[in-house]
Image (cartoon, rainbow over all chains, first blue to last red; front, top):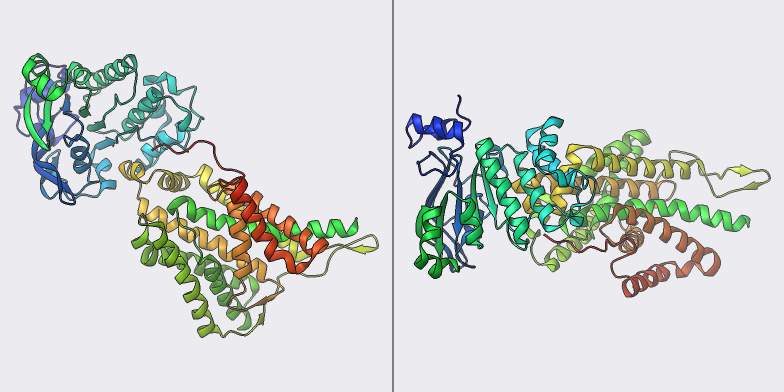
Length: 268
Length: 292
């Protein structure tokens, strides 16, 4: 079995556990996998306001890492700094062993990272099909079978194919942006508040799909969520942010069981 | 009746040129949210380049190609050097910059080429076709104007609808940040957008110049008419720009023939005011506000 994540998997993990995670997709197990993404001491500021203060975390291969915290904890800034939309004042971002702290935003997707920004990130004026095609533009010609695969994942999108994206419901938009990100064939998917404004039933659907993608395709996900309860139900690892600092990092089921922490930071 | 047909033909032909000019404004507005008041001066500059070649004995067609190519370069350079620093900033900054360019380029034309009136040749005849006994206001040159505008429109539609480059340009125009995250080189697409708009603007300048007189400020009227056409169409809509251009062309032609030629500029401004009062979003404003 060849490792889908190349060099990144050999870093910080035994060959056996790396091969194991590639084969089984590390479906929520407690074993440590190799980090696809390492964030070290990342700080960022908007003018005098410090939004991130020395944040360190990892996203492990084949797992879902959820970053949780209240509004203003720095979750969105964290993702925007990782993908280069916000320039850090200190710290490093390492993707698959490569330092990408100063890399251009446009280059990140070629390095295997897809960032789905907050608020769905569909291009409203383009059709569903055009939105998907934009997601694969940087790769040159992309076979029709890859688009068919996305439509297989999200059958709801098939009938909306030629409609402008602004006619989609919130859930359909979320499917579209995740499908579009998949066409970039990422190793790591950054998702910003996918549950925002969606009905609980739709949130559950989206998260189940995500879990399925991670387990079957070996994708790694760094998920930012205010909806901690839903996020912890799908994630393997949780990172709690408060005022720009990491409060605690632990296995998701342990965080969900820690009542004190839940009351203090997660609001449920 | 015969007068009505002639007035309508005249209106349609000048309207098609306004449409091309409005389209150039719309291309830039869509991608960078800037009204390029310098569009006319940029086009005038390329017309003078063409005229210099023609006066040096070159053919009209070579001059046309060189003028359009220099329009492309001028558009790209202006975006990179002058516009890029004010993109995304307060709107007034961009307005001041393009107004400054408008004046500066006109002055530069006068310095380089002189400020006298020069006649600009037309590539085809300027005598109207005769139908039966009467001569109508349709000349070989005006057919050339129509064909050139229609081909340009078709080319742009094909580019935006059917090519990967066009898709990247539209994605950059409508969702800069998302496009960047998807790996689209947005900066390059914006430069290309300005360059293409400058080509279309230059073409409209050359078409309006053919068979007439040029001087550094000869595009000023076209800026007003093209701007009114673009606003009429909603500034955001290429189809709106075309319909707006034809509408303005017809309306002004009727005003000129049936009221008073002196009222044409006034009529254009009245149309602008009425549009802004009644339908500020233009005739083709999309009803859905953009949600990020």
